[in-house]
Length: 156
Image 1 (cartoon, rainbow, N blue to C red):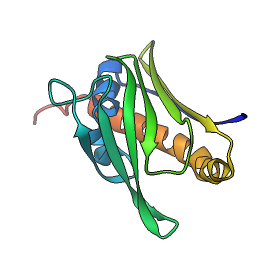
Image 2: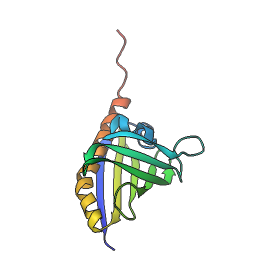
Image 3: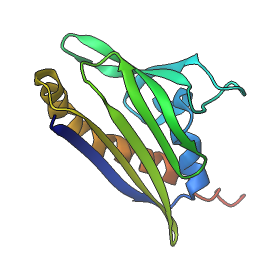
Image 4: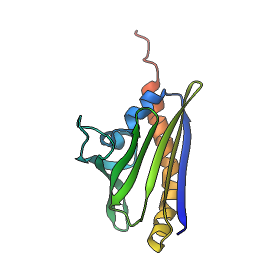
């Protein structure tokens, strides 16, 4: 079956650890992204993210007359570098996998967030929105990381 793909890329002045702190913990997504709420259904051993963790994110905008809640399972977790998840509920797609990859660069971090899923009728409808959504999300993540990385103002 054909696959659909969306992608967002950006570079931030922030160090990979700063970006990782924002992207690896779904509870922080409403701080910087277009989500009204997020949390864990099944957290990892330390209460946070890990391979096998199931989390959820609720969109702040309404799609099809309602707010969409995506339920996702983490399938790869390499601190500071790579996070991958599969959608297990909430949006009408099959075999959806997303990968967030952070690459250190001189003076910052390159962020790449990609997703692929089966090209079904519903999947193509989802693609129409996500092809715009992904670049926006990555831009917001980079901007939030830049704000966190900004040096403190001098006293006085």
